[in-house]
Image (tube, rainbow, N blue to C red; front, side):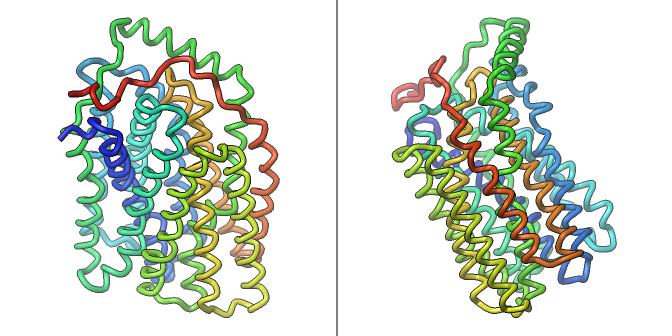
Length: 418
C-alpha cells in the first residue's frame, strides 16, 4: 500500500511518523523525569538532562542543509527518515538493561545521540510535508501530525508510568523501541514522488545557497526565530516540570500516568485537530495569538491556585493543567502551519528547521530557568515568570506575513502515484 496515494493515506503516514517521533519524547520528557524524581534525583539534575536533550533539536538547522542538499534519485527524504529512525531505536534499546540513576552519565550520552537522530528525522519529515502539501491545507496536516505526536507521547509518557507497574520497566522500553521504529515500514512501502534532480549536485548547492541568502535577508525569518525562541515559554517549561510538580504535590506515579495518558494528552489531541481546522479557516495569526494568550492565562491561573492553596495538592491542579493542554494543542498546530507558510519550499529542511530549532531553544532555556527558579523560589513563581515571557512575545505574531507561493508543491493528487 502506497501511503502517498490519497490525501487520507498521506495524513495517516504523517500522523504515524509523528507518533514514532512523539513516543520517545513522551518517555524522555515525562516518564523518565517522573521516575527519576520519585527516586529522589534532584530537580536541578533532571531539568539539566532535559535541557541538554533539547539542544540537538535547537541547533538542527546547522545540519539541516545536508538534508536539502544531499538528495538524489537513490537517496531521498525517505532514506533520511529510515536511517534516522534506525539509529533512534538502536540508542533506546540499551535502556532495557542499564540502571538510570547509577549510570546517569551513560544514560545521558545515549539519549543525546538519540536526540541527534530524532532531530534529523524531524527535519526530513517536515521538509517532506512542506514539499507535498498546499498552503491552504497545512493546518489540517499539522493537526493530524500533532495528534500522532501526542498519541505517541501519551502511550510512552503517561502510559509508560502505568504500564511499568504491570509489565515492568524493561518491557516498557521494548515497547518504546517498537513504537519508535514501526513507521519506517510505512515509509518503505511508500515511494516518495521524484523531485527534479537534473540540475546535479553543484546546481542544487548553488540553488540552496541562493535561497538561504534570500531567507536571511527577509524580516519574516528573524521575527519567526525570535517568536519561536520566546513565545512558548509558558507551556514549554510546564510540559517538562508538571510531572515532578505533581509528584511534589502528593500524586503517585500511576496516578500521574493515568492523568497524562487521558485528560492531559486527550485535551492536547482535541486542541491540535481543532486548531488545525481553525487555522485553515480563521487565519493563522489570529489562531496563534488567541491560543497563546489562553495558555498564558491558564498557567497564571495554575500558579495562583497553587499559591493560594499553599502547595496543597488536589484534583483542581489536574483540571487547570488539562485546560492549558487544550490551548497547547491549538497553538502547536496553528503555529507550525504559520511557520510553514513563511518557509521557502526550496530550503524547506533548512528554514523550517531553524524555526523549529528556535521553539526547542525556548524549551531548553525555559525548562532550565524554571528548574533554577523553583529551586530558589517556588513553582508558582516560575510559572508566572514564564507566562509573562509568552505574553510579551504576542506582538511578534502580527509582524509575520505568509510568503508568496513561488514554487508548487510536489504533485500528489489521487492519480499522481498510480
